[in-house]
Length: 454
Image (cartoon, rainbow, N blue to C red; front, side):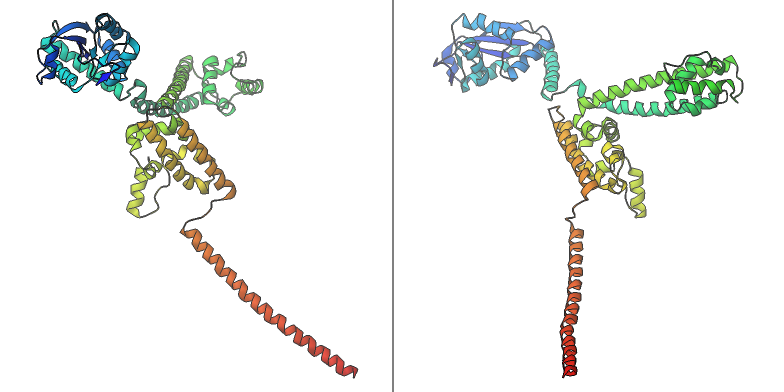
């Protein structure tokens, strides 16, 4: 079928793309194109070899999208356009692009497909200067690169980094807690009043690192770390502290521990920012729904984002409470209502009586964004923002107006209200009977008064 031209037979065939380059062939005998056997009827006109795999990947991705790059365009202009001969192509879309960009006559037919098939089957003999080993290696490398491109693979989508980052963040929190408690207890023997005045752990360690011995507080300036009021509170008890005296070696070891605490705290802040960026790149919708920490812990507990996407909403709700769940099932008690998702900000905003409902609703609303992040090609967080807004609206309804009962329990309560209404009707009938006796009594009184007047 001709594309943009009515030329009956082609003179050139191509471009025949390969892992090592692309080639254009010239038809030697046009009449033989009508035969079934199309071998040995073409000769190599031009061969453009790729210099490296990146160039081959760029060319093939452009051809897959129906485009031609500069290198192929240059070869077609030089070989085909100058000869003023038609070109046989295997792809109709590519033929249309060549016709539009270069104004070349392109032909596509079943005979051309057979010819292309024959050329590809005998590629080793038709392309000189290319060894079979080199072509096989290029084919393997290009296949891996194209597969990665087709699957939309990106290094930013590796969720293993999230699993390692959140695990390291939890380990750092534990180590920091141990180090800080050890530092407070150790320095508390020397200056116990300081721990009650300064509650922030990082500020406490920075003060120790800057001053050291409590005798130096009187001459030290802590305006960069503390306010004037707190600084005065620190300096006053330093002169009359009830703490014991320590040696310079003890102070050096305490200061070294404070340095470790400060460095680990700074690295922990850097790691948290890295985790935030990774979560927004890999699972933006999950991050919007439950936060980066809860989302990262869910991914780490499931093993990967893909495994998390396979879980149902009921499993996402109780993920992280496996021991309590099996213990409850074994003892036939109530199962837990929430697991790792309990630490989400939306559940923290709800009242205690609504935490179970909100956790169930949040798990159901989070499942779809999880699957969208795992399988979707778009990295937008629009779905997470929309579901987050719906969840917040549901929380406001529960907190302010109460939940509207439409289940079987609500119908049972409606029946009970009707039953109470019937009892009120019976009481009204008794009241009506009483009202019917009053006129008789009144008439009797009036009759007696009439007799007295007579």
